[in-house]
Image 1 (tube, each protein chain N blue to C red):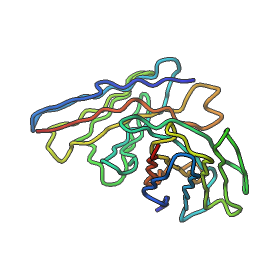
Image 2: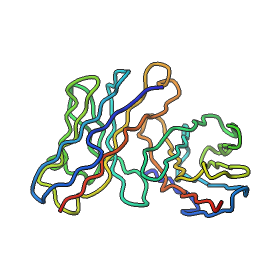
Image 3: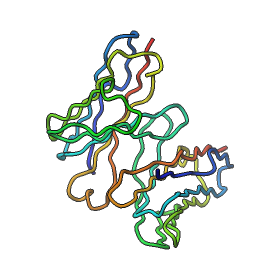
Length: 119
Length: 110
C-alpha cells in the first residue's frame, strides 16, 4: 500500500522559534495532502488541506500566517509552525490519498506524526 | 457544521470479551471510514462503508453502516491484546472533508 513519511518524529524547541515538519508520499504522487493536529486523548482536527502548486485551504480558526503550508511538489508538503509557543505543543500528523488503487477506496494514508514540544 | 460523535470514549475489557464502538453523525453521510491508532502511532485505515445498511467483516471485526447512513458501528468479537488502541470513525458528506470522531480507546486486561 501507499506510504507516507513524516519528519521529524519529535522536536523540542524554544518559544519564539519556527519549526518545519515534512510530509512525503514515498511511492505515489499526492496532489492533495491534509494536515491534522491531535491533542492527547483527543481526535484528529483538520488544520488545512495542502494543494500541490497552489495555496493551502485552511480550516476555520487556523491561523494561516502561523501555520505555513507549502506543497511545492507532488510528493512533498511542509508545515512550518512560526514563532511557536507552548500552546502550539501537540501531535501534528499529515495524510494523503493513496495511489490509483487506493484512490478508489478513499482511504487516507497517514504519516507517523510529529510531536512538537515548545518550551 | 457536520459533527461526528463516537461512544464510548473509553472501554476496558477482559481479553476474550467482545467490544463495540458506535459512531453517530449529525448529517447523512456519503461514506464512513474506520481507522485504528495504536498508542503513540498513527491512524491506519481499516475499512470504508458506502451503502445503506452495509455490513462488512474482517476476521473478528464487523462493521455496519446504518440504514439512514448517519451511524455506524464496529464490533470486535473475542478481543485479543493486539486489539488495543483507539478506534476512529470518520464520515464524509458528499465532496466535503472527512470529519473524525473523538475515537474510542480500547484497553484490554490479559
